[in-house]
Image 1 (cartoon, rainbow, N blue to C red):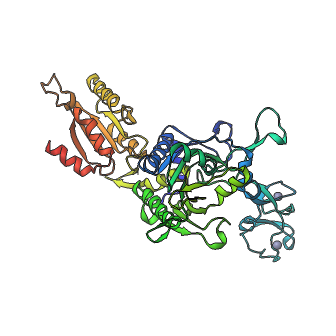
Image 2 (cartoon, rainbow, N blue to C red; image 1 turned 90 degrees about the horizontal axis):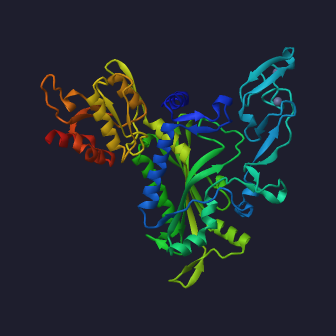
Image 3 (cartoon, rainbow, N blue to C red; image 1 turned 90 degrees about the vertical axis):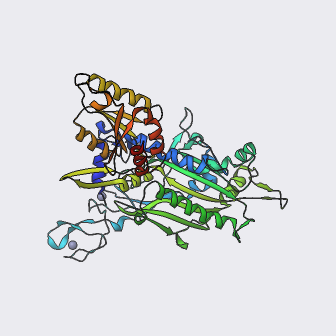
Length: 491
Ligand SMILES: [Zn+2]
Ligand SMILES: [Zn+2]
């Protein structure tokens, strides 16, 4: 498994992820996606949207405002419950999560050794005097305040006056917009249960202990679905909500597998009873083996009718569905598959990373699924002194870039250019050489063919320039390299 340090360094060096505001020393746990990172992120989001919204007759999407009515957060429970218990050091003012402070190594000035300073492993007593930690684990001097609840929502003011009535919040999740728009979507789209509403967008949480690169950040992007079902329906002999919950778990797991995450790095984790939110009937996480260990990649919760009922109560509006068959109004149950886009990107990146030895040299390659790869192809001239070769290479890039992100590069020798593209996961390179354009001095005619090199097998095939768009259409739509190669050899 690749280390986080290796990924962070590759991401910066090759333009995937930069620290936010780096020239000013960086912003705590904020990250900027660079030229390749934004392509990768957009590709993940687009493929997710295509597979879960575009291709399904039972799904629609929305894109809601990040600033919502403050009552939304009252009704959803975020104002009262979305908080962590915090303690502060009265000396150094550092703040810790009360439930995590014992999990830190602690600083101790030991009275039994003339006040010498020790750093003692988490949870252990001092080996000299037997004392246990009571003071600040960091400075070892200050007393900690009693725990206080610290709300994780970012607070701000709507309008020019900074007064209590103008307080609003940056949304801590995208989900609530689907609940408050339930009636609008239902009526405007004339939907029948079961159906789902999807949204991909930014959320904000003032995490006390963010970290681990883009795994936990204060500003992040979510891809969430609220899938509404009739709780009175039965599917395959089971309550509809339970049936659809299992279906979504399978579908989400299959989706991550399809785009490259390996089985051995994925597992399902069932939430224990005492871990479940009070409204959740059942929650299952898809965990991924990140470089920091097994951690949540996404969660799929059966939230019952809690959210719609809460918003109906707080708004005074009816948020129900008319069941034609039973002639009654029902409050749908909702299954919520909620994924973090930044986390998904980190998982795809970690799983794609491979170091191997090729002819005595180290090769670093990101084996991205072609649909996720930031750049689909690089067009490389074998000789950059030959105008006709360079011109042909540019023309090929121009044509292919009508459909895909394709780059031109002539800043190094060909072997080096291949390695560079391998390292950012470009699935194919196209090389334009002397045979492509011919050599009039030697009386050699142009064959109007180029070499396509496959990133993973490093095999090469020769393909006619007029067929390139069609060949890439097949390759990038998932046709196997071996089959395309066989076709190229035949014709
Ligand atoms: Zn302190
Ligand atoms: Zn001691």
